[in-house]
Amino acid sequence: MIQIGVDIGGSHISSAQILWNGKSAEITEFHEADIDTFRSTSELIADWSAVIRGSIGSQKDIRIGIAMPGPFDYSNGISLIKDQGKLKSLFGLSVKKLLSESLKIDSKHIVFSNDAEAFLAGESLAGAGRDFQSSIGLTLGTGLGSAIKIRQVVKDGKLWTAPFRDGIAEDYLGTAWFKTYALQKFGLKLAGVKDLLAVDLDREIADCVFAQFGETLGEFLSFYVIRLQCEGVVLGGKITRAADRFLPYTKAYLDKVDYPVEIKISELEEKASLIGACLPFIPEG
Image (tube, rainbow, N blue to C red; front, side):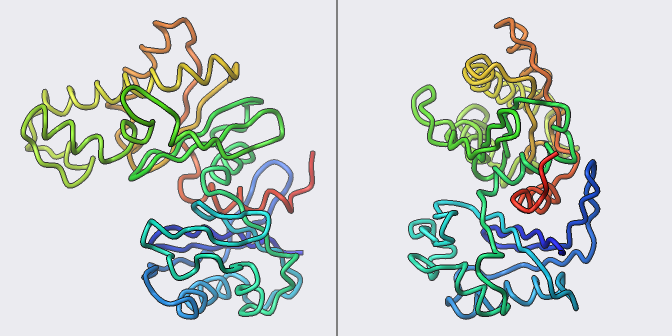
């Protein structure tokens, strides 16, 4: 049996064969493509299928694990995405059935999981979270993804809508916060977080923004790592590329509340979700 891990995002798809040896995962036949997710149902399924077929190759006995953003009925493989614009043509449809027919694979051999859940599962199996029995995984980017692991069980944390300060968590822990804060505080217009790393930007301004973000992340994490008695935190997503600039402030905040939990940055990066999506097919132990 060959396991195929697939990660579908708002504008991208990647897939690969996942070879699991009990302690680590080897990724082969990696394929990826940028996808116009505003296209019709038939065009989307055709585009996705083309990439997945590249990873399948000539293999016959396969299982496919797919990491998808929500909202999504993961058990039944039905898309519930309608207000985000992207993937809108799939609303209410069985993506499982459509891919099963397109790839000519029994639908029972296709499973879906939340993308943040797959990220933490992958890091827990073969990456930065492998030594944690209990952990929180956050993906920091345009939005906030979250998952929680307790022993062998990994679940979508759904923390992006968690009440926090004057709004919800995603208001303070995504790319939009950086843009808003930099503009309001310094009159600085940012296209993204990477602008704060530009060599010609005033270092003091960048340090101030990252310090504020780091402390905010520490405050947010403190509620959950203490409540869940987590051994560690695994961070992924594009914002973590600047982790050395904000993570010291996150750790300092957690030290202040007397819960200095270990925080690790993703080792597998975008490959984590490919591995984690195959968790249902990986034998326990």
